[in-house]
Amino acid sequence: MKRYICVLIGGWMVFNTIANADGVGVSLKIGTLGPGADLTVGLLSTVNLRLNVNGFSYKMKIEDEEDSAELTPEFNWFTAGGILDWHPGGGIFRISAGMFLNNNELTISANLNEPVEIGDHEYRLSDVHGKISFDNFAPYFGIGLGNAVSGGRWHVAFDLGVLLQGSPRVELSATAANPLVQPLLDVDVEKQRKDFEDDLKAFDIYPVLALGISYTF
Image 1 (spheres, rainbow, N blue to C red):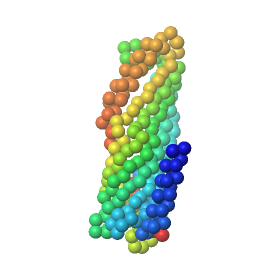
Image 2: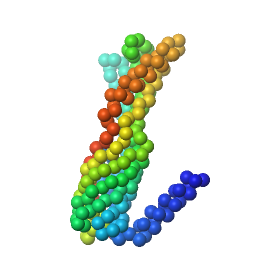
Image 3: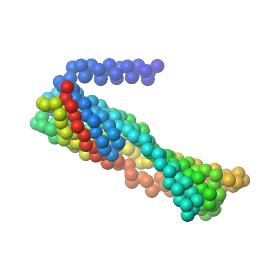
Image 4: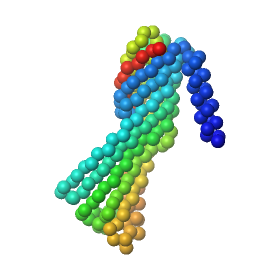
């Protein structure tokens, strides 16, 4: 119940802000977060609020005939958030800061027909599953060009920034073709998972680059 009350209060605040805004604009864009859209409302002469949403899903299959393996990675990217834009002097240049709900993740499954080495042991596996995910909430900082609530109808929108997504979290599981070796496999897989997570620690910052067009109502 508290969650629904918070959603209603948040929705009312957004509606009230838009109703009293000094101009409203919408933007369509494409970038490293995927296809996206902005709703921009003017708060002050040099400050705007942007509500942003981005996302895409892509699944592919990779066949390795040499190792008789089939990999199926799937990208599921979704972010939504609020951004405050400061336009020094009221121009098109902007300095931005905000907070995003971050549901970006990569999943992968594999069918392996040949034995594989994990740790110090060799296994024949019936299936392998993995997932890489990030912090649920991610601060955003950036700069850009474009003011969707300035004079005129059409504008260019450009963003360059970073999403502080946190160190990637890795989930990894595998099923042994021989159930008797499953406990040993679980130990080796957990060690491998930790190694992957350590290798990915440097990817805690996601680059944001987007280009689009805006229309002012």
